[in-house]
Image 1: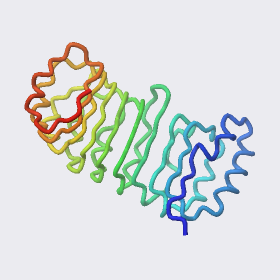
Image 2: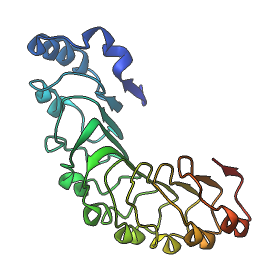
Image 3: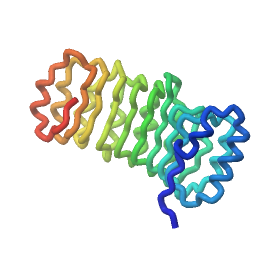
Image 4: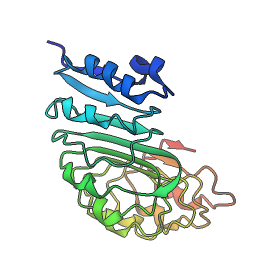
Length: 222
């Protein structure tokens, strides 16, 4: 029994940029037919506007990781993956974040959103199982609601240029934090994050790092 089959871009590389999506659908259907133990599914960089009917053919109980990076699938309404633990959604430009249905994935441990503009923090804050959260270049300002994610260990907020970091003292459980390119000037709020081991401040020019002297467990600073 195969318990960790990976169906990713590498297996489908020759189908990239194929104009005839119906042909792609047939070939993918044939490959998916016997993958009953599929755990990881990566549709990144593929043109699948008319091919999303392949999704119901997957075994919804086995898939734990799903990546949709820079592809043409615009929403995740069709995905009924009850044991999903890792979800990665990335766009190559700012677009409204259609992520309302993420809340149905109650077992999510890792969520990554890139350039999902104006992502609804209230929805994400209800996925209390999250351990790793990346919300890069999502146009975020207020992150106060994320404090309810008490299991969160890794948080990336890179590229949110108007980000208010005043709620961060409540995130005392964090061990890794990425605030690169957030136009920060004052990082005094970070001195209470005494469990931090990794911190990225790259791209925040002129920031005073003196408050970091209180972070005794910090081993990596970028």
